[in-house]
Image 1: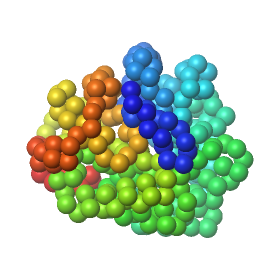
Image 2: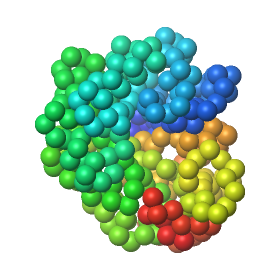
Image 3: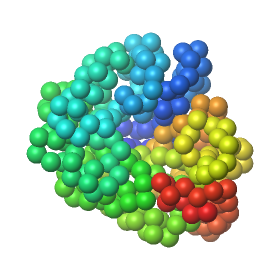
Image 4: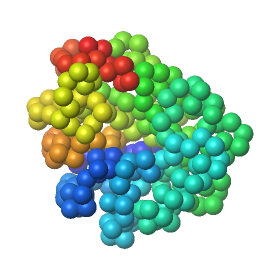
Length: 289
């Protein structure tokens, strides 16, 4: 699988990061199968969080075996100093590790979220202390929502975050305002050597009144050819790595597509965007119907 340098971290991340949100409600047996699959495909980057159900517990047995070959990123939804340190400590205990490569402010989706996390005595102070204590090497910020590219651009101007994580998919680029904001953020991040994770790689729309048949909160592409197009388009953007979808049953198709991916021409990229057919809109990802 192709690897890309994750900005100033210098880590050569596989273009697919193992998104462990998919393990949150799954059995240990199913989690083990997923880990064995990502190892088979050479994935070397893990995304995890205390809020991902039982994901920390599912990954704990694997840490002694794979920690030294994985770039490990974790997150906190805490906004206060105390809440954030609680997440840091309990997360390490639940996962069985003594530190991370990357620790991120999680789900910063609005300017109000950003203000809360960045205030004096807020989450950012805990993250800076954490880095000073050697519990993480790098600091980042994550979020999703229609305004997140603007929020993260502002965040990078307030604090020298090492990485960002936000949604980018062909279906979202049908929304001209979101596309413009995302392209501005991507350009700024690359100019400042910020590592770029993009989430919701195979999101095509929302559920609305449709019956859910996946664990993702958005309606994903399921067919291999659609996933191939989604990833071919995504990896033609100036980004570095993308956490796999929050549906373990789609992991094999995502990994297969990632190993065959080739750059798309600008014309083909536009065709993929124009060809997106969401069954329902998803305002939380700025995806129009």
